[in-house]
Image (cartoon, rainbow, N blue to C red; front, side, top):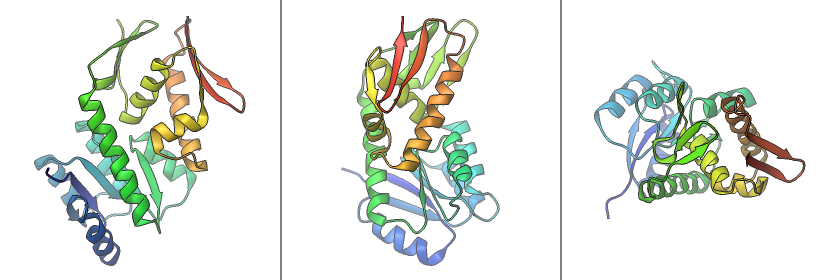
Length: 227
């Protein structure tokens, strides 16, 4: 079985060498140190997942992620950065990244994250293309899309995964810990804050749907109500 292809973008030579050396034991890794070159390579070749530093020459990680998402809504993206501000993490997730690891990070954790997202992507490919009705919208999980007569919205992979989890458990309380574990593989503070961003995004999409709402169950979790 061929190894999954990882595009790894990092301009710190020492860190890149150590990280790539470890990743190559599990994956087929292509390392690039320049942002512009990385995106050009992404456009030419096929990858299964991207690991992006943020502070890069010519084109930063945020810009790369934006361009990647314009072309491919499905491929998992993991940011690794020395930028520790909450605003940077939220910006990365809003651009469609699947996770954000702060340097110095654990190689074991990075490998685990990569495996989680690759497995999730594979499961999505294997799942049947079952659509769901949510108010006036038709939700197509495999296409990450919501459509009605006036709108067509493309979700990020993480948003689609979250919404699909809600739909499959509609009118049922989902514990916050279960959601976090399903989406991020853990239930730490930063994952929790990221979840709140995605919940807010979905609520805005359904704000005009009188029979659809995402309820906050204090100290427990959330419930998608479809009447």
